[in-house]
Length: 346
Ligand SMILES: NC(=O)c1ccc[n+]([C@@H]2O[C@H](COP(=O)([O-])OP(=O)(O)OC[C@H]3O[C@@H](n4cnc5c(N)ncnc54)[C@H](O)[C@@H]3O)[C@@H](O)[C@H]2O)c1
Ligand SMILES: O=C(O)C(=O)C[C@@H](O)[C@H](O)[C@H](O)COP(=O)(O)O
Ligand SMILES: [Zn+2]
Image (cartoon, rainbow, N blue to C red; front, side, top):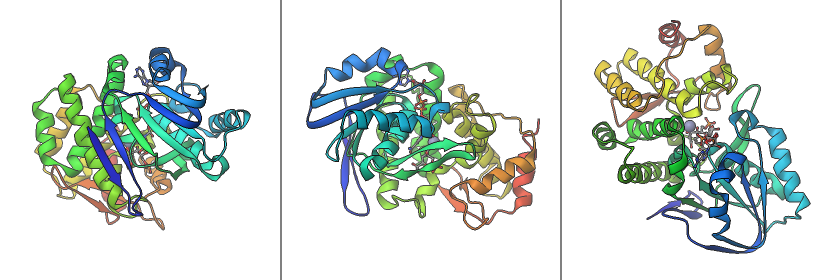
């Protein structure tokens, strides 16, 4: 099954959801991966690749390595293997590998092609599509990066067979995000169906990718609509940063962040308490955390000013309008936000 994404500048690429097929490249190819993924699946991938020259760069596993020094090590490998402007990088892993490979591709000799082969649920339903690439630094999450679209995305659900349960839950959080913000029917379906079935997870991957492609095709550079994909992230990114990227998985922080955003939506009258409860129930079904103890609400609030959606000191929040729709607003007063944050002090 193929989902096509056409960007505002009319370039386009395919997102193929199927078992990997043989691929031949008449150019140098570097696969970027980590030891965990290569231990499980590198042989399977290599067997599918035919390239002019193929090499693999293995970087350490973990969000805490999503930084500039890891990018330098990817670039060093590319220079040592004399990659040129017609060479290709392949991101083989989860969102961390995807974001960093894409960023390295965007700056190597001012930009070369890359392909996404996502291996986590989160990267299959969200991170591999749409061209947001980048790294974290001490100031916050994804604060350095580039929009750089892959030339193709290959989603093979087979990789999910080795994914730990907690990582699966993190991916479900981003699926729930797509449904709550854009698709009420999809959310109702998520309430009624179990994503642990092979058939259902394929349906959820397809729905999520279609939603993301639909959004990005209208607003590649996040001038408007795309900000909705940040539902739960305004709060979630602060949680990840405050806990040094070593306590919550990205999807888990987003799960908590969606609960916080829902509280805000309830407070400003955009969502009913029942709807907020229904979202929480779906998250809890997959053991996604929904609680977080904020240490200092003023500190937490201050972090929002470094959020990339914030402009001229106005913080932008994504608040659901019921289930299946949302509002992107910078009109919520600090007092109201602080009141919501205070609910998470214990
Ligand atoms: N660019 C985007 O649009 C976008 C969207 C969402 C998230 N992200 C980013 O993605 C990152 C999170 O991605 P993630 O949740 O995939 O985490 P991840 O990349 O850290 O992968 C999670 C863990 O699973 C392991 N793993 C990967 N595939 C596996 C498999 N098939 N079997 C067993 N283990 C496997 C990894 O080695 C890692 O330990 C964050 O940095 C987030 O900011 C980016
Ligand atoms: O693709 C998007 O747009 C998203 O916001 C998807 C998010 O799930 C993802 O975590 C993204 O990396 C967050 O972007 P950021 O611009 O807030 O760093
Ligand atoms: Zn995310």
